[in-house]
Each structure stands twice: as C-alpha cells, then as structure tokens.
Amino acid sequence: MRLKGILVIVFTTLAIQSKAQLENYKEILAITITGAEGSSATERDNECAAGYKAFGGYCDTDFFKGEVLPGGFDNMKKENGISTLSAKYILKGVDNKGDSCHIFIENNAIQGSSYSKPKIFTDSKALSFLNSSNPISYLDNKSKFTIRIYVPDTEKAPSIEKVMIPGANGLLAATLEKPALKSGEKCPIVIICHGFGGNRDRGTTCTIGHQLPTENIASIRFDFNGHGESEGRFEDMTVPNEIEDAKCVYQYVSTLPFIDTERIAILGASQGGVVASMTAGELGHGKLKAAVLLCPAAVLRDDCIKGNTMGKRYNPLAPPETLDLGNGKILGREFIKTAFSLPIYETAERYHGKACIIHGTGDRTAPYTYGLRYHDIWPGSEYHQLDGYDHGFKPNPQKAVDIAVDYLKRILVEGK
Image (cartoon, rainbow, N blue to C red; front, side):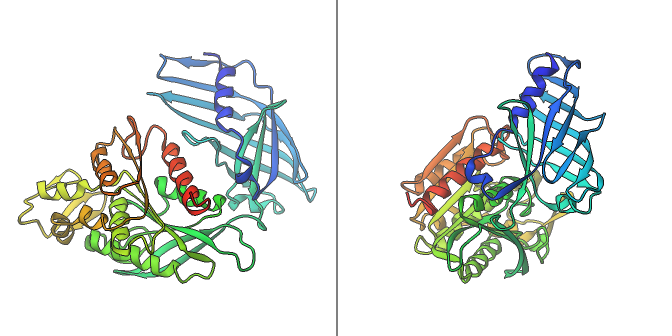
C-alpha cells in the first residue's frame, strides 16, 4: 500500500460539512498540503495496516499567514476493520496583528464521521481564542488538498451553558445547548440520559447533544445522581431515583422561556434508555413529543433476577449491602432490590407518543431482543437494527447518532 493512498483515505474522511452545519461557523485557517511524496506504509494483510507520511504546506488567511514546519505528519492504523486516523503539525508565521507565532494542530478523524474535531494550541495573543474554540475541519479537495478549519461564529453559534438542577439525591450537573434564536423565538429540546456508570460528556449521547443545536433543537444532557459532577453517591443510585432525576430535568426545561413545551423529547442510552422509556411512560405523550432509545438495557432486571450485575455474582434473594464493581464503583443493595421487580415494559407501554429504537445485533451487554420488545409495545415506533454493532455502536457510532438526530429533526422540527 502506498502512503499516497493513505493520505487520501485520511483526509477524505474529513469530508465537507453540510451547509446547515457550517452556517454557524467562520473560517480561520486554510492549510494547503504540499510535499507529501516519497514515504511508504507497511501492511500485514487486508484487515491490519499502518501508515506514516511526512508533509509540508502553507496557510494564507486573514487571521494567519505561514507554513508547516518540518516534522508534520499524517498516520493511519487499520485493525480489524477499524481505522484510527491522525495528523499532527506546527505552523509558523504571523497572526492578524503582525506578531510572530506558532500554531500546533492535532487533527483526529472521528470513526464513521464525515468531519474531524481538531485540537489547536497557539502562543499568539491575538489568536488565543483558538485554544478553547471547539473548531471543526474538513478537506476542500476541489483543486489542492486544503484543510479548512472553522470556529463558531459567536453571533450565530449555539450557546453552551452549565446549569445545576435539584434532583432526587442532590444537585444535578447539566449542560444546556441551544441554537441561536431570535428575540422571542422558541425551539424544541431533547432531554438526554447517559448509561450506567457514565456521564454527560461521554459516548453517543454526548455527540447527539452537540449536534442537535445545528438542527435548531436545544439539548440538555445531565449527570444522574452519583455520576459525573452531580451530587449524591453512586452507591445510592437506583433506576427509580434516576427516573426522578429525569423528571426533575423535565420540570426545569419546561419553565425555560425559549422552549416550546409542545416539543419536548427524551433520549437515553443503555440504562439511560430504560430510564427514558419509563419516564416517558410516567409523563405520558401529552408532555413528551418523542422518545428515542439507544441500546436500551432492559436486561438489567433479568440480570438482577439471575444475581449477576456487570459480571459480579450474588444471591438475588439476599443481596449484599454493597457490590464492588471495580474501578471505584460500589453498587448499593437498593439498586438490586428495586431492579429485581422493576416494571420496565409495564411502565413504558403507558407512553403512546412518537418513538424510535436503535439497537445492534452484536450487543452482548443488552441483546437487541430487548430493543425489539420496545418496538412491540410501542405501536408505530421506528426500529433500526444495526447488524453486528455492539453496545457502544462500534464499528461506527456516528451511524447511530445520525439516525437519532435525523429522527428528532423530522419529529420536532419538520413535524413529520
């Protein structure tokens, strides 16, 4: 395999963002790639390969003019069908104030995504906003290979705000993201529930929360009690008190002046999917416009009945006071006791609104049949079965993200 081919693979992964996604951004850097010849790659077989290529280039924009210093490189590793792509380089030149400076860029492609999220560090005072600007990038290959890097336009970009909300066991840390709105304008919102042991800044739920504002939908993702930055102990967490957390978040967003209360939805992954489904059943379709479940882990009740939670065995009829799950996670007896007889589907089936379930057949944590049952109890729901995808939606998490975002856009914005 020639590395010239690998260079094309890496950079074409950074495909052009949609016009809707880029309209809230402004271009800061445009790096034209040159001198990318002469290196080679090693390949063991069709499934496992590695490649490395040095390259040069230059940038000429209103914000920065300069060149790529020697040592810039692009690499690719492919293993078992999964590619890890990365480019690292330093620009040296002058900023828009005429001061000499350096800009370090680490551009990591997102598996299965059409764009990348570069990390940028600079010693330029005028461009210091790049250090925390949340940029995006794509390849413009109409003539030369040019990596274009954009940052949010503060006048058009979605806003991000951290809020604290009273929950079942203390304050809940939440991130509220909303699209740019005109004075008096209202928008829909999606309440996002992470999975067991997770937090609001990880996984597909976090990615969905970031993408929704580009579709004119606000999002609020929060840490359940005992998770992330929220108050409470993980040991005291149960599915019922996570449902109470979700309902507290619903009450909070329903009071926000820019939220259209007729267009509130809930989304959850894994155990968060169970919580989202039961919250939907308790609140009803009069309060929730849509419910989206990603790999819902309704298996948790069966696991507790069998006396096996996260691989830790116990007597389900006399559960221990605590269960050490490792990695500093201590599960309390109340979780097991409540989960043992948790009316998951019985509660969820009281919801009669719009719904979408996304599950992979390769899920060994929560087999896809549990998602199918939700499809059965929710007539008219959409069911998306991803062949071979695991509990985290590998090999392509972005596919599940795109399905969820597209569905929510159709229901909440387009009214389909």
